Image (cartoon, rainbow over all chains, first blue to last red; front, side):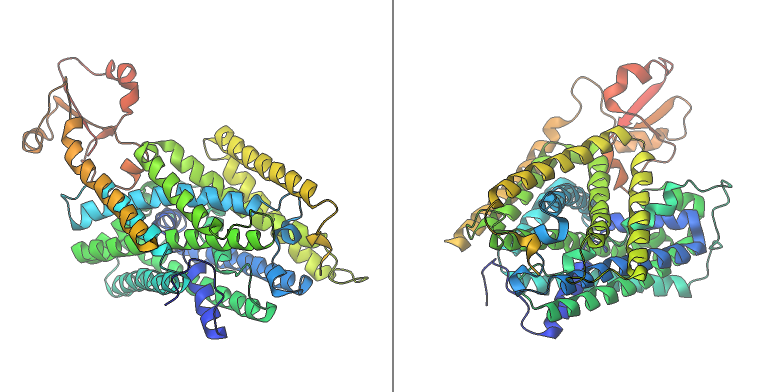
Length: 437
Length: 96
């Protein structure tokens, strides 16, 4: 068994497909997403399906952009996704910084939430924070068991979470609905930000994209897997949203922070709580494991591309650093602070903004020497970028903590530019990834 | 060597968890009275009682258990909002 934490590419197309799919779903099946979806369903009722379908199309456009990247940069496999080529030299460190921050804050939040669920659903006398620490330690320990074990574990986490949700959906569909799944009647209008909230529900799909060590053909197979994962997740989420709205009043769903637990309780009573408890904990494991994997693969890719120190233990150190930071945040009481939610929202918006930056970047790269970007591609890229940046702007400005979010975003951009400047200075006269095709 | 390090690492976390179980009672109310859940249950619905949920962040967002009728209050701003309650009423602040 391979116990090295060094990234090892999948051995077969089937493995690549599975690998990409389960990691792409990692963040999507997180309990935070379920809570957000529940509130969203409380506002939109049956129209949730329409908006989710629209957002899924947007994400298919992001995936298409990654496919175009592989076409543009079809050089040696190791350079298939050089960050300097994708984001430009100035923002080459942007994805890593954003992902690292996301890993720290989201891990902190999710493990604490799992602790509460374990305490309130399963073992009431077991302290919730103790469970959170233990869970984090176990997930960090899982990382050191090697990529194959991590991938198998990820399959179990994602599979269990989705199976649990599917079970609740089926139970909900067969049970007589106590509510009509219609738009909320408590207020005649729905606040504008809620139209853009679904943009956050499919985030993290790019964790499934291999950064290095695979051929462009294998990478495209991975992207197909991710599209399938988004479609499957989208259908399940829409069904869950409809079932939730059928069994819980829209006003209650829209106002609560635990819409998923309330809906599960209404559908199957105590059994529903237990099933949802399992979904929450395995969803947390899936999200955190995916984030750790993402950090490891990205640092490994950047290490090989000489954007990070060439020491072999850099990926392991990075993941250990993230786990330690999350532990420190829990110990420091950040989980009980409203600021954590603001940090999480800020990093998600930065991550989403990264998808938009990719569209803009592709507009500036000619597909081949002397060729021009087809108009239809330009239109797709421009529309995708506009919706993405529009969503980021609205969600940032209507958050209630706008200045705080803008400060975090500005600091992150500043950090990325600082490291990008350093990288550009170091590369001057040496290897220029942007010119490689 | 790596296996030993992993075992040590996991042991540290489990120890931290165990310490939190032991230390938790030490952080219970000091200068204010503590009401048991049986006492509180007996007084639920009384006009003389106001229950305040002082949990914030994930402590509140993630919890399914919220006492019906409880109002949310920020424990850090006690001096500000406590003045708005009649002095002959009982205020019960709960966080877990």
